[in-house]
Image 1 (cartoon, rainbow, N blue to C red):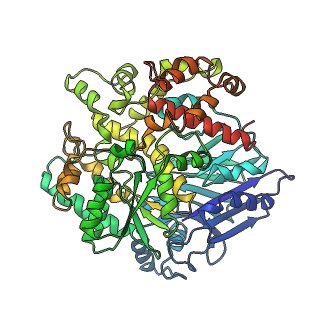
Image 2 (tube, rainbow, N blue to C red):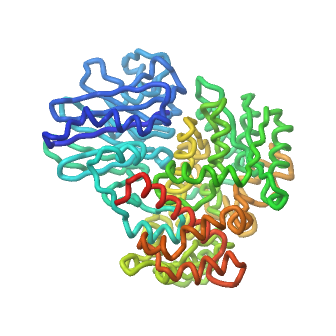
Image 3 (tube, rainbow, N blue to C red):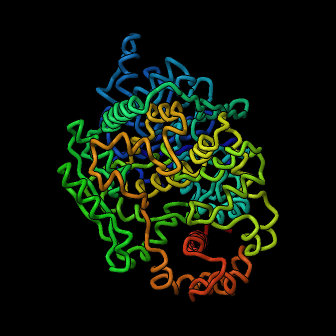
Length: 608
C-alpha cells in the first residue's frame, strides 16, 4: 500500500524535479517504509511514491522498471489475484525477478498484454504507468473506487496524486471553492461526483483510466468496467446460498494475502461478523477490534456485547476501543484535514484505525456489503410505485419518492429547496442535487428500481463517502483497510442475482442473512442493522455546543460569505434549544463538519 504522485510541466520556469519531493512529503503517512522517484528530464516529468510494505518488502520496491527501462510503474494498492496472473504470464515464458510482488505482476501484465488487460485485475489499486518511448502515461483506478487518484490539468501543468494534499505546497494552483460541490454536500454530507470541492481538481472515476500523451498534449478517458445487471432467474435460493458462501470464502482467501499480521474491525453486526466467521472456516487466525462509548447516555449506540459474542465464538484476540467525546473534539481538525474535503458522516473509524495501527498494518472491513445486498432499503418507495405500472423515469417522481425521504428513513439531509434558504445568493442558482443523482440513476441498464438504486449507491455513496473515508482515515495512520465484499467475483455474483432474491421489503439483507445462518449465532442473524454511529444529539448539545455557536456566529458567517446569516436563528438555535424547526442532529453535525473543514483549510492558507 502506498501513496503515488506525479508532476509535469511544459514551462521552463517550473522544474518538476524540485516539486516531487514536496508532494511525497505531504503523503508520507501513506508510506512510511520507503520512498522512490523517477525523472524524465527530456519532457520535465517527475514521478514518485511512498510505500507501506505489506507484500514482498524487497521485490516490490518502486518505481519499478521494465528490464529495458522503457516502462516505469508506480502503484498504490493490492492485486489480490496476482498469483493467478503471475502463473499465466510465466506460462507465456515471461520471467520475474521477485518471488511474489504484485507490483511486478502488474508491470508485466501491462507490458505484455496492454492497457486493456486492466479488466483482469482484482483488488484495490491506483497506478501510473509511463512509457518513456511514446511519452504517454496511463492513470487507472480500481472498479469500486477503493483507492483514490486525483489530478489537475491546465495548458501548462499536469499533476496527480493519491491525495489532494500533494498539491497544497506547490504554489502552482489557486484553490477556489467549487460552489456546486458545496450545494451538493448539504444534501449528502459528501461530494457525489468526480469533481472535488476545489475548482479544477478532479478525481478519476472508478473503473476508468486516462491516457495522457505529453508529445501532442492530449488526454483521453476510457472505461474498462461498469455495473451491468443480468439476472439469472432459474437458480434456487439454496444454490445462491452456496454460491455466496463459496465466493466469499474465496474472496477472503485472496484478500488475506499479506506478509504482515492482520485484524478485523468488528462492529458486532452481520457484515463484519461474517468476515470473522468465514475466516474461521478457512482456519485463518485473526484478531478483532471493536469500538464503544464511555458515557452511560451512549449505551444504546454500543454493539460491544455482540462483538464479544463473535470474538468468544471464534476465539479471536479481541480489543475494545472506548471513545470519549473529548477525544473526538481534540481530533476534529485532524479528521477534517485528513479527509481534505467536507465530510459530514460518522467518524468513529478514525479512532478505531488510530488504535489498530499501533500494532497492525492491515485491517478487514465490511464496507460494500450493504450496497451488494440491499442498499439500506432506499428503493422501497420507488419499487412500490413501479408495481402500479406508472411511469417513474422522471425527475419529479425520483425527487418525491427517493431524494426527499425523511432522514430517519435513510433519506438525504437538506433538500434542494430548503438549502437555498440558508446559502448566499451566488450559491443558490446551481443544478439540483436530486437531478445529478437522477442522471446517474438513469444510466443503469436495468429497469428495476432496486438495481437502479444499487447502481446509484455504487457510483456515489460507496466510493465517494464510505470508501473515501476508509482510505483517508486508515492511511492517515499508515494502515491498509481491505473490503473483501468488493472482490470482483462478489460484485459479479451480485449482478447476477435477481433483486427479489438478494433483498426484500421485510429483510433488506435477506439473502446474506439466509446464507450465514449456520455460521453465526442467532442474535447476530436476527439483529437489526444499527450502523456504526456516534451519539450525535448528546454531543452536539453538550461537548460541541460552544464550537457550533462560534462557527455560526453572525461575525463568522459574514466573513466566510457562504451561508446566509438566518441559518443561526432559523436552524442552529432552535435545534440547540430543543425547539421545533428544520434542523435535526445529522444536519447540524454536517454543517459543523463543513465549518471545521473550512476553518482548517483557511488557517492553513489553502483557501484564498
